[in-house]
Image 1 (tube, rainbow, N blue to C red):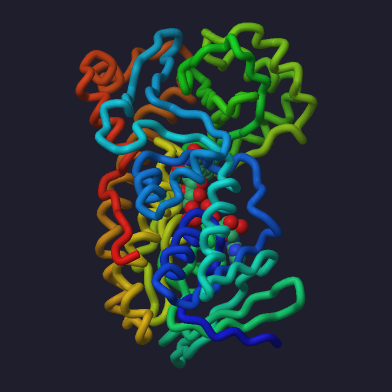
Image 2 (image 1 turned 90 degrees about the vertical axis):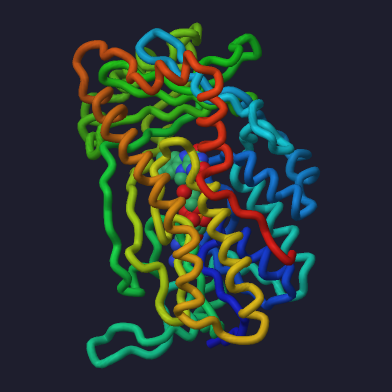
Length: 412
Ligand SMILES: Cc1cc2nc3c(=O)[nH]c(=O)nc-3n(C[C@H](O)[C@H](O)[C@H](O)COP(=O)(O)OP(=O)(O)OC[C@H]3O[C@@H](n4cnc5c(N)ncnc54)[C@H](O)[C@@H]3O)c2cc1C
């Protein structure tokens, strides 16, 4: 079996894992990122890069390279409630360098971070390598006493990675958190999202980002040559949706789209069957404690985020920055203690909790109500207030675009 010795082993090359890998490598550390897929090419991952992340990329000298990648921009967000349009966030009111959300395929961001990391001798990304088990010492009840690394399987067979710290960045279905025995609190989600693409035309303009109507919620994201569409369904109802047949699905999509989009039927007709759509199951949860001695979980592995507000990538990246800021210097000389790893949780728990609390409230008060309503509902009061008071749209832009506690890399 191949054995690797490294300062930090990162399980999962998503936004959290790749950003942390790059930051630690910039500190001169040896870092090994394991990513189970062969490439970063996966459709319908969150593709939003927020103003705070753009600020971080500028700090790292990577903003020009990032913005050279084809992308679209969201400067203002609006929503349609039944058939009335409400402005909800105005990113041009921010004081950041980039006053917009950039939309680009997530794999372009991850590729850029990987390329930037490869400039440092200590940086290694192993694709097609799946983290399977933790290694270390257990007590007589099989609970972990300390983690010394992990076992993985790569294209050439099993690998053992020994590290001063393992950081689990392997997403909402984290294998590392499963085998860690850490306790997860779940907060439920009333919905799943069916994603697909529809043709976009140059004269489409900028319709609202989403439409909430009684019984349906539709999200529409401008991806340049196409619309990325999210059709929100009540949790666990995909089988019932399929049973009604694809024609019925097309009809539901056509009637759910924002009313400002024309020629809806012709566009929906480009969907040929269920292979053209993919279901993303939504979950919201959080670890009670994010660490063991030698293991730290961050990003969705520590706290699965709802798509509400599209802030999960931002949080994952900010967790990675806090991790580098808090334990990077220690890792250069020794293994951080569990208490030192806990500092990351202490710093990031509050923004996570605040964001998830807001997401769960929106899921219950707005999404579940809209999905289950059989007749038109009045627009929620906060939506009406934000639409009428311009300054509030700066506040929502701050919450979505910068998050509750933005982080900035230190010493790198
Ligand atoms: C329907 C939906 C839509 C969303 N839309 C948005 C959005 O528009 N904007 C936004 O900011 N957030 C969005 N989110 C949330 C966002 O996707 C996550 O919060 C974010 O991707 C978390 O980043 P991460 O790096 O922690 O995990 P992930 O992005 O999940 O990355 C984990 C990585 O680990 C790899 N991996 C998994 N297991 C292993 C293993 N055992 N070994 C090795 N590698 C492994 C995976 O292949 C993956 O590359 C959405 C979520 C959902 C459910």
